[in-house]
Length: 353
Ligand SMILES: Cc1cc2nc3c(=O)[nH]c(=O)nc-3n(C[C@H](O)[C@H](O)[C@H](O)COP(=O)(O)OP(=O)(O)OC[C@H]3O[C@@H](n4cnc5c(N)ncnc54)[C@H](O)[C@@H]3O)c2cc1C
Image (cartoon, rainbow, N blue to C red; front, side):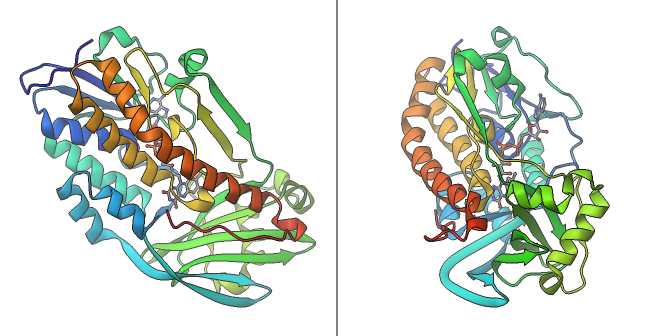
């Protein structure tokens, strides 16, 4: 269980999950150590994903510049960007400036990472679900398999995993209505209170996440609706905002947000990164950014020491304070959304991290 500091070693690294975290770590490591065996195993097809676009704050991108320069250059060319956000309340649109944002389609980000991984020689196996791993078969196992991580599940006791579901319901739609800025749209409809979190992620499309409290969701009858009926209802709620454009589904179903964390970040030679390690509420939009930063931090830690145990300890020492700060901001944000239907006083937190 050694990580060689030289380029001659024949390390076996398994990344379980080909999302942003797993692919980016694989890319960073393989570029520095072309002889190492780096394999990414992904349950989905290469061209399949959940959700629509992901947004980054301008500040997030400055952190990512510490990663792979070629990937960053390619990513930057594909980003949509804008300088402010809009809050729509009681039909009044209030612009709030001073927040720079960028966004990209999630599938576009994954395709880009896959292309760079392929060019670097990372082995990628798609349509292969990992149920259990035997850590002794590898020098390092990176559990980058997202919020429903099977690796975390396998070692849940060792990681001391904690999970709490929020009360609000949300659904992640897309739309061809192209919003100029990131917009938070609050609407009252048939006695229910709704908010849409929207931003464009390509010149033709926007993410459109609809969120509401559990009471509104039950009274609206969403539990008995099909995907099409649910979209039709949401199109009526946000008719003024969608301007005739339909909502689009990518196997979009209503969910409650899982606030997930782990007391321990690694066990033996297995380490959690990205959403497998902790989830970040979508209202502060930093999950992908944190996943990519985890990959950078893990890569650095692995480069800094020969022994796996020390590398994983160094990773946690470097990352924990930053992650905890963002999780505190996320908690403040989701607490606010959990109560917005009560007409809560206090300020709305937007992503600036
Ligand atoms: C509604 C919503 C909106 C969001 N919006 C934003 C946003 O605007 N900006 C942002 O930065 N973040 C956003 N996020 C968060 C973001 O999607 C995640 O934080 C990010 O995708 C985490 O990356 P990851 O690589 O850790 O996990 P994932 O992207 O979830 O990737 C994990 C991968 O592992 C695969 N996998 C899972 N289990 C197995 C298995 N057993 N075997 C093989 N493969 C497996 C999955 O198929 C998946 O491809 C949002 C999340 C939600 C729910």
